[in-house]
Image 1 (tube, rainbow, N blue to C red):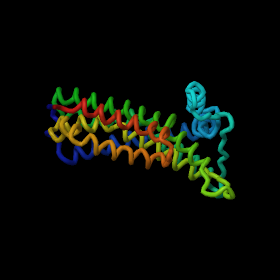
Image 2: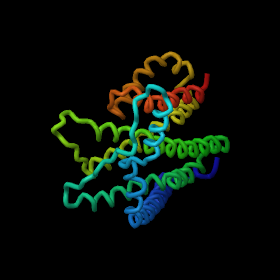
Image 3: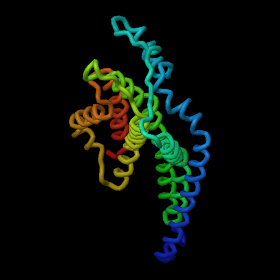
Image 4: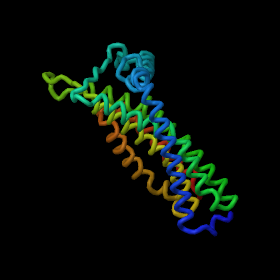
Amino acid sequence: MSDSKEMSFWDHLDELRAVLIKIAVVVVAVTMGLFFVMPTVFDTVIMAPTRGDFILYRVFERVAGAIPFAPPFNAESFHVDIISIKLASQFFIHISTSFWLGLVVSFPVILYFLWQFIAPALYEGERRGTRIAFSLATVMFYLGAAVGYFVVFPVTLRFLADYHVSASIANQISIDSYIDTFMMLIFVMGLVFELPLLSWSLSAIGVLRRSFFATYRRHAIVALLILAALITPTGDPFTLMIVFLPIYLLYEASALLVKK
């Protein structure tokens, strides 16, 4: 171990404060940069799922056309108009979206600063394991966020935007509702994809064993189906399976990472 154990509590607190200040500076800097390019980001990235030419809709259209007797999937006709119903909504959405995306973009740097803080207190072997864990956490978070953006959110948006409890009621989706759902699903999927890393960490300290996954597999399938239904509240089995399969594969991947 390093000499960090000879440091007092207040010395460690000062180091932690310095790390938090560095993190805050990075997040603020990235947020300010995103604030200036946010109109372009909104048009090309955030609002892309509202248009029929989004990549997932094109894929669904081709798959449906290639499968005999499959119901047709028309991507071109889909379009969602987003409206602003509050005077200051667009201004505050501009700020809040810049901040949350700033956190996403800064995620690797945040983990790096945290790694620098805890690394001196670890043995060499522990450092290697922790370095791998931090790297995997970054990769899995971004992978989950990508699944949320390219799959889960577009499927949810398409279902809810076209859903009508009555034909006499027109759907008018506000920018606040759209962004709240967008950010929630992106972050939820990013966190869900940390499941294998969490399982590996619990296994490393002796809390979790592989037999747990085999014993409770059927219970897990039911629970994951419920989770998938909550993320995408649709009765369409195809849509439900699109969300369920990645989560279930994460469950099986977690089982392979833990000790026997």
